[in-house]
Length: 65
Image (cartoon, rainbow, N blue to C red):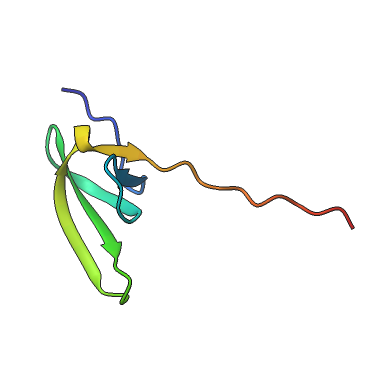
C-alpha cells in the first residue's frame, strides 16, 4: 500500500473527532498522529491510513473596506 500522507499533514478520522497532525509512519499503512483534546492535553495514537482523511484548511474571507 502506498503512503498517502506526509509528516505535518492535518487529518481527521473519517468517522469524526478532532483535527490531528501526522507525525510519521510506523508501518507502510499506519501513521502516528498527535492532537490536543478539549482540556488542552497532548495525545498521540497510531491509526490505519484508510481510517483518515485530510483536512482542507479553511481560508477566511477578506471583507471589503
